[in-house]
Amino acid sequence: MPASPPRCRRRSAPRPTPTPCGHASSRLTSPRSSTRRLRQDPRRSSSFASLKPMPSLKMASWETGAKSYMIAARAMAIIWVDTPDYWRWIVREDSRFSTCAELLAVCWLDISGCMPCRMLSGDTRYAAYLVFKMADDCFGLDSPLQEASVSVGEGGTSTAHWIRLQSYHVGDEENGVTEEGAPPRLPHERPDGWMEVELGDWYNHGGDDDLVVRASVKEARFGGNWKKGLIVQGLEIRPKN
Image (tube, rainbow, N blue to C red; front, side):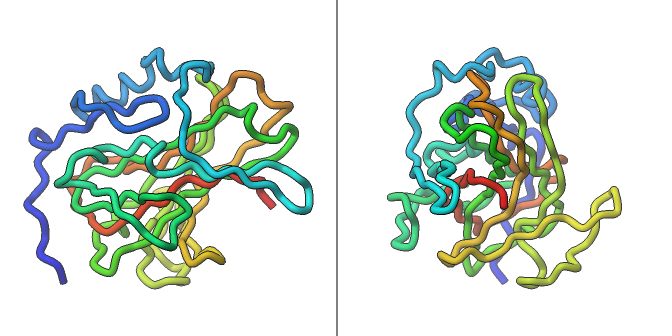
């Protein structure tokens, strides 16, 4: 077992505020004020006119022609991703992108990605999936549970549920229950050898004009639980079967 990192202290580990569709900013805030600021941040408008170009891979369904996208980890908002003690960028030959983000040690997890709805096919139900792997020395990602959510537009429709990124045993469905009594969603292996977990789904109407869909996974409570070994390739958005 790897040595445990030093104890996480609330005052010494404030959380930075994420930008709309990119890396977390260097401005640090307390957990409570960060949540308020995210809700009030005018940059999180439904308009995507100011969103910067993002590394992504476009795909299409052979059956329906519906568009799919994989958003690279570089284009996602990952808390503390530019702090070398917490995360690092690595090269993997099995990744679709040049680099992936590897978690070294953090006591707070907050990852999100977004995309303009008009880039997707209209009148189609989509789902967002976090695509990742676990390092051999991973720990701390099984508890507490993470909260996954998908929202469309400013104050628009949203869905949320519990997930467990690191199951006790691969394929074991008995990985605890949520406060509501339902089991959390668990990751599954993809044909390409990576893991994925669904963060939520939504119905994309006729392009939905200027709306932006945002998918995220984060810890709902600041518990000071250290974790390590999550390797993020990106966020895949594709039609839900």
